[in-house]
Amino acid sequence: MPSISTHVLNSETGTHVAGLTVTLTHIKTDGARKKIFSSKTDSGGRLIRSIDFPLTRDEIFEIEFKLSDIHIKKKGIYCSDIIYRVSFGSENETFHIPIIVSQHGASTWWSGA
Image 1 (cartoon, rainbow, N blue to C red):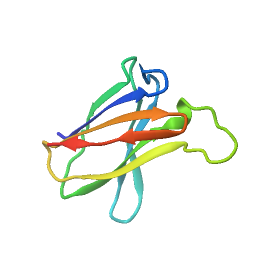
Image 2 (cartoon, helix red, strand yellow; image 1 turned 120 degrees about the horizontal axis):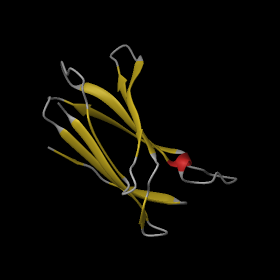
Image 3 (cartoon, rainbow, N blue to C red; image 1 turned 45 degrees about the vertical axis):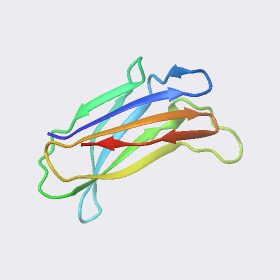
């Protein structure tokens, strides 16, 4: 079964980001949305989840990182979420998304196999 993992770090304090909500939603071909899971990062800023989901083709998913869990909303421009749209084409795929966040920005990349 495919899996998703992340490691979230705070660039302002140099610490792990615990308690950040990460949600995976399946986007069906008709546009309907189904939440697969919603979990929080652990004390080390990590989350690892296997997806118990039957893949029949390149399924489309959205992975949401809820930055409003950790940032105080300020006036002006405010980024409340980071959302990736990804697809899994096989039952054995892994997808890792590390993120380094601050109050005013984020740096991220992804890897998979």
